[in-house]
Structures are given as C-alpha cells and as structure tokens.
Length: 382
Image 1 (cartoon, helix red, strand yellow):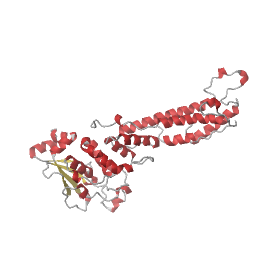
Image 2 (cartoon, rainbow, N blue to C red):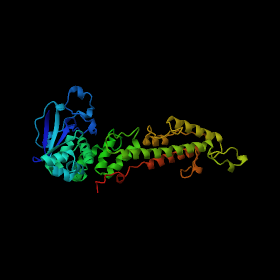
Image 3 (cartoon, rainbow, N blue to C red):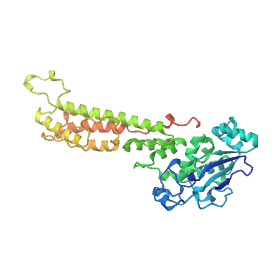
Image 4 (cartoon, rainbow, N blue to C red):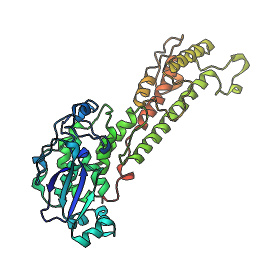
C-alpha cells in the first residue's frame, strides 16, 4: 500500500494515519456541505463517480495549498493512506483529546514513551481539514490555504468540535467567514442547513446561529436530519418550538370555529325575544352560517381543519402564516364604512372573522425567532 505524507514537523514523534477515502472532496464554491461518512474520493473509477452526488465531483484540493512534504501520489486512490507527521507536544498543548491519547496510559501513549514515536489511526477524519489544523497548532500559518470554502470549513469545524480545538482556531474565524458568509442561506432553506448551523454553533457565531435557526424554524418541513453532526440538541429545540407554536395556532383556530358554531357563547345573556345568539351585528344566523361554512371549507382545503396532530412534520410555519392570511371567508352582510380593526364590534361581519384569523397569523409570526447560542455553545468558548 502506498501513502501520501504531510510533514508538518520533520522531527515530529507522532504520525496521524487517515483513510484516503476521506482526503479530498473538492473546493467547488457551489458545493453543499457534507459529513465524513458521505465523502468519497473524487478521483476514483468512473463507475464510482456515477454513484456520487454532483457536488462531490469537483477538482480535488490542490496539495500546494496545504504544503508539507508530499510523496508522489499513486493513481489508485483506494490503495493509499494519508500520513501526517506532527509533534506530540503541540498536540497535547492544543487538545484535551490528544492529551488523553498521548498521556493517558493508552496504547498510543505507551508506545510513544517506550519507542519515542507512535502512530494514531484516525480513519473517520478528514485529512484536508486535519492538515489545516495541524499547521495552525504548529504555528505554520503561511502554509494555510489562502481561500476558505464551505466544504473545507465544515471539515475543520467537525474536527475542532471532536478534538476541542476551539482556542487554536479562534484567531482565524473572522477571515474564514469573510470567504464563506455569502454562501450562507438567508431566505430559502438549503439541504445543508444543519451543516451551516453546526458551523455557527462550533465557531460561536451568535448572529449567524440565530438567523439560521430562525430560517430553519420558519421553513422546515419534515424531519431535521443531523446524522453525525453535533447539533442534535439544537434540532430537538427547533422541533419542540415548532410544535409549541403550531399547537397554539391550531387551538386558536379551533376556538374561532367553535365561536361561530355557537359552542363558546353564553346563551343565558340573550333574551328569548332576540332569537338565537349570533356573532353577526345584524343578528342574522345565515351570516354566521355562511362565515362558518366558508371558513371551514378554506381551513379544510389547506388541512388546518380538523386540527392536525403533533409533531406537524408536513407543516411549514411560513406557509401556514401565508395560508391563514389568504383564507376565503364570505358573508352576506354589506361592508361597514365605519369599520376599524381595533374593535371587533365595529367591524362588518366578514372583516370581523378575518381579523380574528389575522390576529392568529400575527401571533404565529411574532413567535418565530431564532435560538440563542448561549443555550448550546461549547464550554470551551470563554
């Protein structure tokens, strides 16, 4: 088996050994963010390429961007491993995880102290991201890539979270984000939204985290897929908040329906001479009936009635607000020229009903907000 080597420290006593499958994923700016178990080498056989998503078929990372001494690459990528020579002292100082590996009495540490050198197999890690972090840890800042991409950044972020390297990368965050921030979704929900949330969470980007979680809350339909990303608590919080908002919305809608149905009115305060109690200011029961019928038909057409059950996977909050504001409600009563939306009693009958639904939509809209980073951020950030 051939290997490709990155010599970060020529006198280093630790060799990090990685699987070549996780080495290069391309630097196409339009690429979607991905995770380690989704990565396949972009230079394998044509039959393999046919099975890969289009965004993984970009050019591989230019090794000159990552520097280090590189052996000639074997064209058969499946027969390679990636070896990164580093210093144990630097790893121990920078990472609590590597400190345990190299000083905690494990096999790697025993071999290091017995023979003066050791290898650490890291088959699940990205080599590209790890080389960048190794250069940072060893102070070789001139060897860092000149341009950051979303793909490389998600590699780095996952490794920062795994090995607790938050302090090491802190000086570089602003520069990295200058390159990738234009790619952050702001209006439409991207398939890789949870990857962007991971970047914001791990790098402690408070404003980006709040905006991304708000977008996710407003636009998400179906289950949130976190896979191996360290954002399961964030996903759970988003699902919980979505359920709470929609549950209240549908309960309020049901209350309006019951009001026009006559189930929530105090019949005892109506005299017998006034006939059946109504919402209609002209006391026309046919007006209430038309409003109720048209409202039920509109609600049923968008599956808001009967009230749906949790966890509301098929409902998007943003679309729900739009549907509520466009419900078709009909009334036979003429418009009231003196109507005001500040007082139900002064509205004509159709506007009265619509204002109740609009109020529910506004409450839902006002309830949509991003999560607070302080509730989730790593204790490794000060």
